[in-house]
Image 1 (tube, one colour):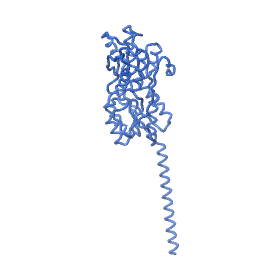
Image 2: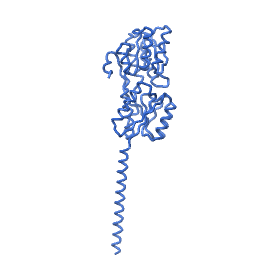
Image 3: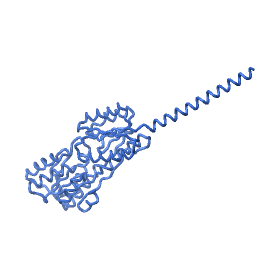
Image 4: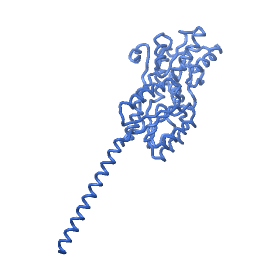
Length: 321
C-alpha cells in the first residue's frame, strides 16, 4: 500500500512538471505572437515642412514605410525650424515609447540634448540629411557628403568660366552643417584656380525670397559678378529672378544644389547652369530602412552615405523623372 502511495505521488509530480513545461511553452509562444503583432513605431521629426526638398524626402519615407506593411508605423512631426520645439518632439517620442526616432535636425550644432535623451532612454536614433556635430557611437546618420556637393558645383562653374572670373557664394542657414561644408567644398576647388576670385559670401537661409533680395543687393554694388554658387536650388532660383530683373540673364552663371523639379525646369530654359542631385528618395528610404533594421536588431553602419551627382544640360534627361 505504501509503495502504491509513493508511485501515486511520483505520477502526480510528473504530471505537474509536464503541465508547467506546457504552460511555459504556451507563454513563450504567446509572447512571440505578441512581438510579431506589435508594429514597430518610428517617430520622425523633420526640421521644416515648408522646405520643398525635405517634403520630397518625407514622401519617400512614407512610401517606403508602406512597403513594410503593418510591421511599421511611421509618425511625422514638423520641427517648425525651431530647435527647442524639435527637442520637445523627441522627448515626446521617448515618453510614448517609440522604438526608433529619426531626426532631420533644425540645428546641427544643438543636437546633443536630443541624442543624450534618446541614448539614456535606450531608444535607437537616426539622423538624416544634416550631419550633427555630435554623433556618438550607437547613433546613425543617413545622408550625403556636403563637401562633395560644393566640389562638384564649383568644378563645373570653373570649367564654364574657363578658369577665371568673380564668384559669389550664397549660403544657407548658419545652424546647418550643409552650409559650412558646401561652402568649404566650393572654396576648396576655387583655390585651385589663381584667376577665380570669391568676392562675396553671405547667407540667404536656403530661401528663394532671401536669395533674390541678396542677389539684388550684390548687383546694386556694380561689382563684376560672373557666377553664383548657391548652397541650394531655392536660393539659386531667387538669384536667377534678380538677375533677370536686372536684365543680366545669360551674363552670370548660377549653380544650385538639390536638383528639384523647378531647378531642372530652370535648367531646361537655359537659366540655371548646373545643380547637384541630392537623392531625396535615397535619403528618405535609407533613413526608414536604417530605423527598421535597428529596431529588429540588425547591424547598421554609423554613417550611410547616399552619393551626390552633378546635373548639367547634357545629362538632365537622366534626372527629370
